[in-house]
Image (cartoon, rainbow, N blue to C red; front, side):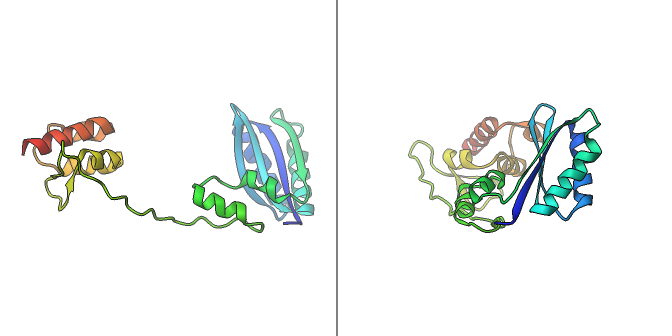
Length: 187
């Protein structure tokens, strides 16, 4: 990472960011890291590459947009430090982020990390119930752990549910869990 540089171009509006990024990418062999919206209307174009390439790309973009009303500022950070580089690593999940912090070279490609299913304890108050068309049973706690999309799918396939398909489509998690528990309890 000793020869990597970060180029920053700050502009007002997304149009200015796209124009600056396009000019920079056409001018030199750099990569567009991100166009970050700092706050309402302010955007920062982030470029990365070799020091000389980033300098020439930022200079070319600034030359194109400096007379425009949307240009604000630009800066090139030569030989970007590993710790500073971590500011520009996309935030994924904590396991991948720890791997990226440990790595001092290039950014680690994202990995699909599978979580082990947690065993669910059945409560005595509400034993596990079997949903229509399903091969397994669910407790209230299990239903509450499911995503809304999964609950909607279960509700669509459940016979005798009091909600219409349109109501299921727009129902929140609480309503879906309550309705599924009511339907299961009636059987």
